[in-house]
Image (cartoon, rainbow, N blue to C red; front, side):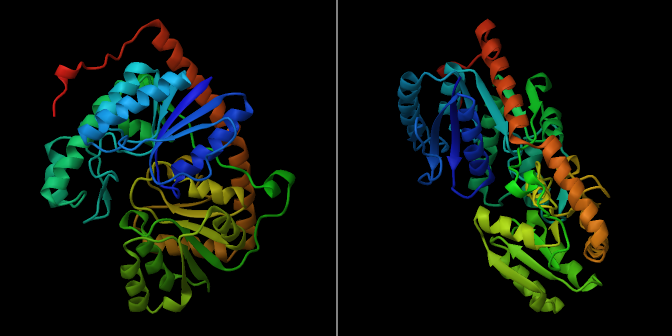
Length: 417
């Protein structure tokens, strides 16, 4: 099978990491990968036999760039003759329709961008989750101002709203939608996406060699509470910082990440008198983060937005690291409370402090949680398991398109704007 992958490349995100791992696994099964991308110059995805094309205009909503991208993409598809398209990003509307018209198309809903103009389903004013159904509609525009879930700049707000409407209309017509969690599938189904064409494939988690040969990755560890992620309101680092003075166990909080909220977080550590107990390392590469997994005693995931999956947790499991997390989004699908770590109600600072203390103060408990976490990864989140499911989705999409086209593409005179 020859697979056309389409994505927006930023060189640092989880989608890029997923794609690198997926390419190697598919090629190991004698499938071929063709990559078309927009964004930053690519690194790490080149390889023998792979066809890689940078194509500006894929992700922008500019119609003239989109028309140029369609012409170039048509030439690429003519040369490469792919069997199926695997789309990971919001596409220019013209490009999206061209792909769907030409090929059986599978869309990976990595997030909520096909129905949420704000993208995060989070009301930042209250740190509460948006549970609206049937969106996007006028309520999204009002809530941007009233509940702060999107930009308040009118032109940009209208642009994101229109882009979301167009993306959703296209995604509802694709041959299959892959969701990284049951939570993501449910939220899409609530907003009018076809449940019969959606499939849950949990993200794969690469296993370090030690986890496969029985090396002792578990505690005791250094008294480090690790945070890995963007420093933005969605990731809830401020709740972890507020938990520090309420904890009884001496520890250091190590922050691996960067983001626009960093100055505010540093100011918070000063106000609470915990600055000496927090280390900010900035954004780190994958190898450096894995080193931290092996040193820390527990990973904290205090996200307040509904994480579509939260792969950082299962990655920590693979290195024998227990996790304490807020129970939002897809996180409860991999974190079994009391078995691999602890779930805490979102924004419960006291509960977060208590559970972190429990892991830090009881090495026997930490070892038990760590051992079960590694077992969960090997049983449920392997790359082989994910690829097997993905290939079945591809085959179903190809077979369905061969029988009939039930998702017609609008003709040019039907398109608006």
